Length: 266
Image (spheres, rainbow, N blue to C red):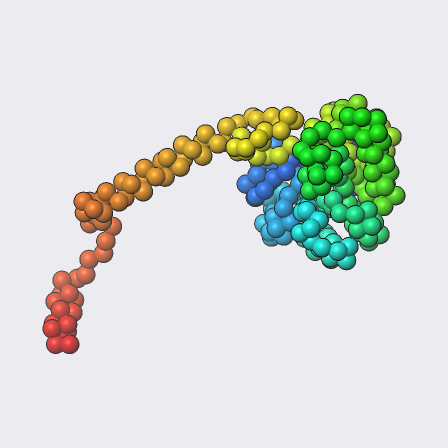
């Protein structure tokens, strides 16, 4: 039986029953690979959602475009932005802006995913890029944020780099669909970046990431081959090994003779 794209109602019905898989993918090739691999949910750049080829590549992926709140603007800007993406085939949108902005979209029946725990765009408030919720006070702040998202009408929330015990306890007590990035298996879906899975990230590797392939080494190999090919081309042109006769076009001798006579009289 062919797979169908899950709806919000489908995901809500699956809450607490099994772990879903989620990836951040950046282009059509990665989206198609996620589709063929059986990934359930993807986070994508808004520009990819607007690509007319996207749904051909990923017909059954529950797709959630998102961008940092400061890239979009006010609540009204967010609503217009979300409507464009929804019209293009988005299943939900990611929003780390204010609860009022989330509510503005939810009031228009746009499914919204919020963000709690370590929020990269607001990491200065929680001490930088490190775990959040390691004390009872901090954990309660995460719980209160989840309750605020519930009240605003959000469908779900990403919960990032939070102790597994805290994430599990919250997920069991909220109606939100909880997406775990480094917060353990007590949530509803596991979320990783395709860049990390493919070994494309040359910088710091987060604790929760897992590398399944080494694309960086392959990219290095391909770059070395690219340089070698270009160098061989330079050498061929310098030595006149290129172009060969098979690379060029010849003129009919009679036409050439006529052309040369025309040039002589020009």
